[in-house]
Image 1: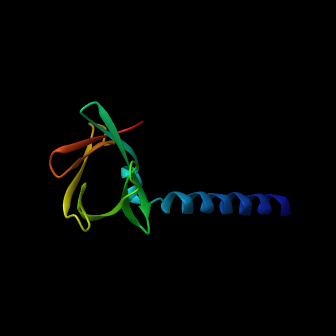
Image 2 (image 1 turned 90 degrees about the horizontal axis):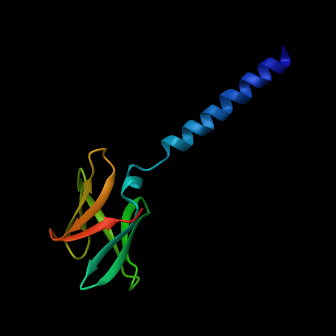
Length: 110
């Protein structure tokens, strides 16, 4: 009986740890990743990551970083530059691209 009780406690404890890890995932995670855009046969890359609970965009060719302030839904604004940033989704709800300033379309790299 003692072993059954111990087994039940261990199973409950591991279930709580798994749930805590799942709940701690930031809703911003869906936007993270590497994005690319090609202009005049030159491909540039940006990286979107979470830093201090905010999205941060890094231009991989220069290392310049900018924080993205959340406005609503999939809409953000790039701090300091005041550029609009809108993430686009496919029919399944997956983030597939980001539109910056209304005309620069960066496609998510898989």
